[in-house]
Length: 180
Image (cartoon, rainbow, N blue to C red; front, side, top):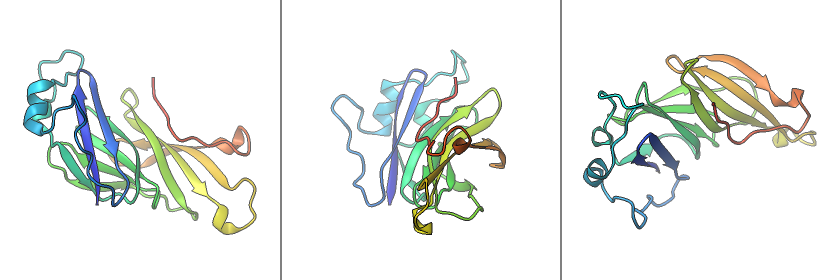
């Protein structure tokens, strides 16, 4: 089973996804070892809001349903992690408080899909996702990969837009994205 651990610091919640069958992430020197220590050592704030979420309400570890998790981000507003999958191209949401998980998007187009880096666009209420279609199984295809950027609605998971990177140049792909 895959595991997700996070480290909280002011204005930062960093999810670290481990590959399937990997050993759980051991605490590094200088990092708190458990949730109690995390809540004592760090405070998560949302632009100074007094109502900001507290790491003490979050788990120190999340077992993931995603196959070969890749990429991840955290949406402060909904208090959910989003994680992609190299196994089937799905996008999973994990409730930071309960650990409940749901597949929020799965590509239905033919192909072997991967979801890679992603980031939350708070202003537009979207999840921006790097995706790739691995076309090597088709045979001698050039290029062997087709890169995409998807925009998903943060609440429903509906794909609102898809941008084919090959329109810029044939071999264009992305592995990570950030929204400024």
